[in-house]
Figure 1 (tube, one colour):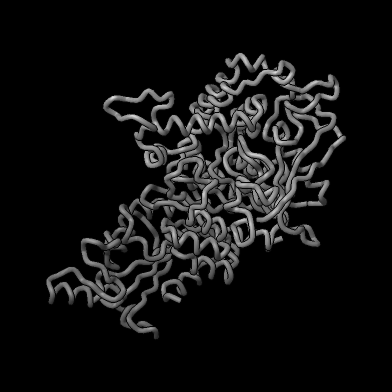
Figure 2 (tube, each protein chain N blue to C red):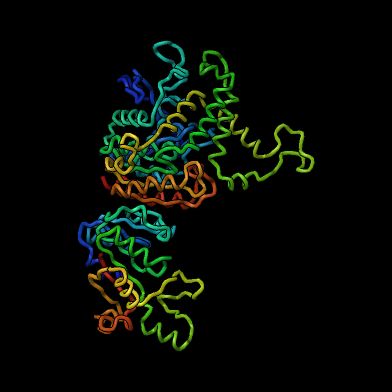
Length: 196
Length: 373
């Protein structure tokens, strides 16, 4: 399992209502359903992912996050999750507002663009970083809004969003000491548990 | 699906209809595919659309050229897999394929009902379908499934008998028709009514046939079931004979005209004009949430099943926006729902066609049906 997903699971209360934005093939939502008995709904736009997620027995609605979430009533879910999708949406700030309107709590994960490898790549090559986890060229990448850990926390401060907990995933599977101490430099993936 | 044979169930207990009138007795013609399991938990009801009937799959004889209307979706290994499910498909009350309808004999007069047949609503079909379920000992449907007007019946099932349905599948459907939709139906009805052969609906007594009107009604309907793109690709601007420079002396000039005329004449030979009027009226009046204070969310709070909603990108008769309204109301009501808008060029007709992605999503959802009872 992707490390960010393992962390998120701890924050999900058993039996709660969970909305998963950009749920992919539904692997994570299925895990939450099995291990946390959540009442889950996933939103996805990719055809193949939708079919695969539905065949897992999940409730999946085809919906483009960039077209808004106004069809979801206020506080209709306990937790709204968006794993690795913040950087692909047109208006990350508006999505965060919407997530916090729909859910009591939200979980957001994103790749930290402040990681030293990104900085080094840009500094030495003078070109947009390309890596194994982000293998796209600048012109054809789905990732259109990169941010760093510091950027995200500044946005939360500006918007009056409370950070309940955060977890940082580093390069190693073991206790990511560097990543938790200097996340903006050493975290590859940032995971935030937020509320308003 | 192979060889299948229709059966008739006769009912003598009067059915009180939404219009207030009663039908003292009636027949329902139906077909079944697959085996009903011991616990009777694998039964699926198929609800047909405007011009549909009970013959949804299989062939009636080895010489049959065409299988049932939903052969693409019903059968072994298909989305509605007859290796797993017992599938029941009936001709609705008011129909013209064997179930009691305007062309049946009114026992009180000894003559065909004609235009005096009671006005029906989708809920009347649902109640009569529930009686058929009782007759077969089916307490609860694993799923009720329908496209278009059939989807409306499936949705109505989930509200009228929440304890008798586990899954509701509504394909290319809507919670109510738009004014534009009703307008198209009205043109179709006017085409029939203004045909002298219609004789105010008493054509069976008069020995006349409103075939021109019924054919015209079907031509209008057919245009709305196809997308502009599908028509362009199928016929383009091709002429049957002659050239675009000089025109043609042919009575039928463009290919698309020939196609529409053929559809119209085929239909007028096999369908009853009074049934067409009755079915389009049931469509026009269908309004899922009317009795729930026009609040679909409140309506769906009465339901207890899970839903699959599907729409097709180029369907302008029952557009994806109408399906989204269903989905949004279900989400707000907290009902489990899955939804996909399928890319398809074929317009409303897509729900009858073997579009790979459609069959994939449909099959993917059906895996959970029948295992959660």
